Image (cartoon, rainbow, N blue to C red):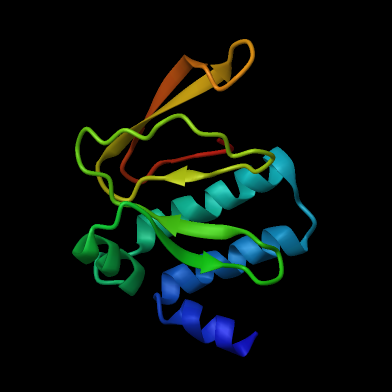
Length: 141
């Protein structure tokens, strides 16, 4: 676990605290919507407090990756991703399966459409949409 802690710490103090808080959510046995809400609250703190020069933020702003895995927990299996979406970016409908997702916005805003399956196959119809602004978070998704 020491190697994991040092690699998380390399991404910044606030990110390391966020991961410790998220791990605590899982360690306490929270699951489903209760866990998603607890992680969302942790993410809101991270988004509000992390400066642009914290390594995880600076790397995303510098490299502009469409997606980057920042952390994968070896014990609980959750993954923390970082994305930078250019204006007008759209992602094809996709299914997170039995997993839940907490979305957070560090800067700007993002629109997150939701879909519902209609009939057989992969045809999907837009259900609704939500817009998230800087410093906001949405979960589960």
